Image (cartoon, rainbow, N blue to C red; front, side, top):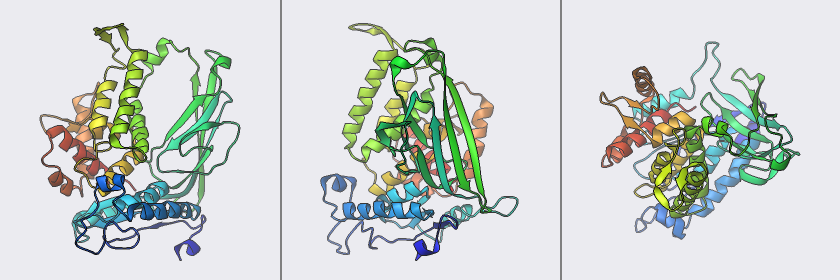
Length: 405
């Protein structure tokens, strides 16, 4: 009925409610002799209904995108409700997920009202039926994207045969778009032998969407860069440790959907070793001489925190919690991803991640956190046995995620 009533010219947002025994998803059976599934059950195949339910919602996600429907989930229960099965449809449509205790809580009401905020003209702060098209010069090939988007499988000469995430296209569709939506795009050099050093190349992003007033808008952003040699010092000076860590986190959780956690950790270690051997200065067979410049020095620490984070290490977390963690990581930008993985606690309780910042920047971070803290008091209790850094990372992530629309 929703699909018939909803068209790209009349998009909508669907907010379902769910219970642990609804069908589908079916996170547990009505028989009390069976305990609710754990992450180990999913990997071993003992969760009989998981794969069937997840496949159902993967098929449903394509229908949601074709009809420009955004799927948001508000689940309030003391137990799991099947968010892990639903996550594929929610993420691909750009939807929001909330896990809480009770629909009577004030936190739930505030979070629900946030989705229907309006601008000065009375229009909903929502953008629907979004497409992002990428146009590149002939030396750059498009591999794919990771984030709340779906490939439209429209190929041209700039699309690479190698696919990463949602690949095989130069146009992606999003169910909705906010000022905090973040997507990672991947490119490769088509032929390194033909590239002329110091020449310019272009990557253009064309974004079309339906505004809250139902008018179509288009935005065009063009990035211009220059080709440099493999050993150019500009690679060192232009390296962004935080952005690289955020992209690696998305790649890691993308692999974690198919591989076991320890295989993903091995892959991260392999990539870090490759990175260190390429950009580090050292004397062979003498570890004491190893040195990384300041533009690279924090990256190994970031990888250390990533491999121990709740995005990769599923120990003591339910499938629903892991699905929530990973879904929000794919929505958020670099700054909040770094706050999640490498949080710091100041003497006055301020939350901040600062490389070369000031006290004013940390105070601003505290103010923003205060604005967004509404609903995640449950998580503070849930993870109260963690060490201070782990506790703060989880708490900050949940608190800031309430701003997503």
